Image (tube, rainbow over all chains, first blue to last red; front, top):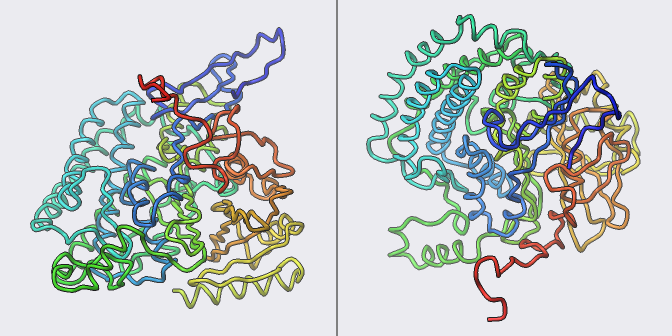
Length: 398
Length: 172
């Protein structure tokens, strides 16, 4: 058990245990705070309360079965997790994905980014006392989840991206649904900004709070909006493009204030940029074309072919019983999740089950900078700082 | 992109070889990624060089993880993912560690961000990092026995599920 050692008879500071059951820790994070009055002298984050051994479970599944586990890592970004795992296995196999599937992947992960930022904005605002923003954010998030339900049949645990492409053909009527969302959303983002950006209470609670310098942020391996708010233009979509991101036109917002307010502004700007990407992907996605690559023995055959071709039936049976065996090797892929650099490392020993699956969880690594953000601040600002690094405990503990 | 990436990686490898040839034991190219195998004794020195050298500037340690190749020896492989933000480069460093002596130098003095990454590897694989300021378990409880991501640790754990708690008699 993590404890803080204080000298016997010392009355200047007290130790306060925050969490693991505390609403503003967004799950089950425990922080030990050593306080001098209301000022935090020392903070020790303690995580692991939600550890479910997903990486170990992946080793006991075939490559395709493990996709369903990836949904559950960062439960606000299931499609992003599907994407990074599929990209890693596809890299291991050396598969090329059809452009149509790549564009659908881009469009859906950007919608996912908006929905994740909406949950972040809503919960962060409610932590700081702005109740109504939460309701507005969840109203729009619901629309995005409806789009996911249309595509994948699931609102949250989608498992829509599969090794070699997509699980299903994009459904009839998806264009109307996405179009409706694209028309509605920009004015809604303005609405949130009207409520918060120049709100004096909001500014008072966030400006100048939780500062971290750019050097410290990089040294502590921080990524995502937290790093970009510190002025470092690091975005995997731009620096190391994947899934055809190089064909899309978008800006990577950066700021230099590096406080809670700056991170809020970055995320709002990112929502607008994501909308631009969704718009472009909407026009790029052709109506016809394959959504799965042609790789017999790895990508399941179409249902119709199974009824007429013997090989297709054999492959179907083999894929769903034995699985497929990539050549021995290791692949690491990093994508930009709403929280930062989400990486997936897959090692194969030539068997149908992965030798090792590891996720580089951005909120786990960003969380280690929390003491740097809050030491010397007031206890009420601890809540603001936990909020702006945007942790998802499912991902922190895996 | 891939052609560019492999050219970039060649530059990095050449630069590291020019600095100290014996610190680069092997270079593995796979699917456009380059992995540099580093002898265990040179790890921290090489990382310090990779971070500070103006031509390399690997300022971000993205990830550190371990692969257990039980029962072959050397059993453990540590993989470090380095990113150079100014030069837009990525490279993987790999250190092979024998199962009989799972100790490696900590990279916390080079990148403070290695702290939790190494604690996670220590917790789940039982690899010790010399020079780590705070080497404690992080995801598992302190009284947990064993290191569950080792390949010889069963997926279902060592302990039986207490059948009695589900109202089932054990020797039915």
